[in-house]
Amino acid sequence: MTPSAERIEIQGLDVVRSGQRGAPLLLLLRMAANTELWGGVWPGLAAEFDVAQVRLRTPSHSELDAPAEMFRRLSAQCAAVASELGHEQFHVFGWNGGTHVALRCAIDFPGRVRSCVLLGPFWPLEDMRRIDAGLEIMRVMMEQPDRVLYATYWFMGGLSPKFVSERFDDVLRWAHARAAGDPFLQGASVGAMKWAKVLRGQWTVAQELDALAVRTLIIAHGLDPWNAGPTVEMAAALHRKLPASRLEVLEGCGSLVPLEDPERLLGVVLPFLKEYR
Picture (cartoon, rainbow, N blue to C red):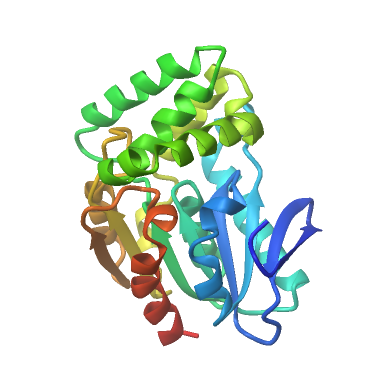
């Protein structure tokens, strides 16, 4: 568990909460989140906010037939979690798959969401050939009975080559832990790939994005050896759709920057959040 935190259940969701009562609420949103992945940024965020990491449930195969409705339901659940925690207003910080939910929260609850951070957002591109090739590699690995290979590739693709070289024992430990504990890696490959493709789609409409007034920080990572996204181009494409957004690119970092270089990430996120607290 993340330091200085308690685990509770709200609305059927696993929530890990800091002890900073009376501070503004910050919801950390990541699909099937592992608390260790947020561990590096947790102390810095918890010093300023009442932080609640919401472990969003991996959707069922049938739910993926209607992604827009599914993300609306997840958004409503997050707002309900904030209410249960005693907060009318709150900030959202979505990471990868959680960016769809965070963006949906800002659209659905503009009077309640104070600010929105989107780290490594997925967004469709005009040319998706590289992403599709990465997904095909992912599919082949997901069809192997031992999902440790996929988890190892995922961690190696989200970290800088220097980090992987210097801390490969940690990479292997994290990969084995994810393969053993992540529901995404324990299901059938067909469902996993359906979910992966949903994540790389757009589930909002242009009018919603044009009207969004919630201040939004979009953070992209410069490295993408994973090749299946998210990418800088995806973040830039979303930024162009959101008039109230700001784009920051962390050069030299991969998608797991909260794990590899939390201080650098906090240096971008905290000033933004405090500006709208």
